[in-house]
Length: 175
Image 1 (cartoon, rainbow, N blue to C red):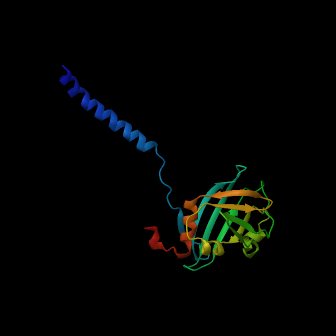
Image 2: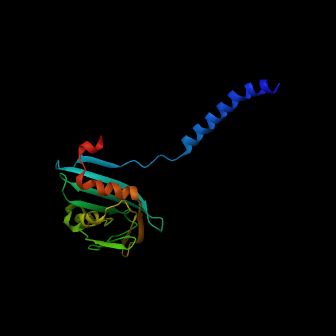
Image 3: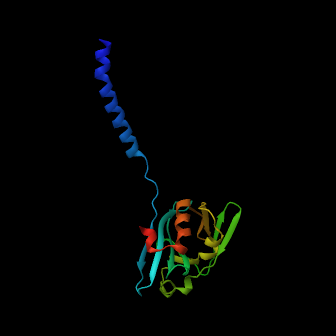
């Protein structure tokens, strides 16, 4: 009797175990995938960018767009965008970046971009990203601070990794 019971329960247990494992695999979060994209700008100049929506400690949403214009070695820029009407960004205001004991001050270059300089909403700012990327050797979390706007905007390591890939990124990296 016990042998017959084991023979009938074994396939049922295997099926239930398989279903449980399938549900667990579907419930696990997918790993973060790189969001680096290449496209030409309105003048045909190649642009490679990383776009991420981040929240500061006050739970306000910001877009962080790191991009390179032109071929590898071109200028590296970080654009921080808030929602128009909710924030006004004064220029020039340097972006402070913190990671552990290291600190950087990124130059505000917003007025170098004619489109942003003429935009009366003042909801975006651009910063020279090159000095930061030259110093980073690991994908460490960063904390951004824009005085008078936000105290801490956390940047996760996978976003830092995308930013660090921009200086040398080519179309072959997309494959």
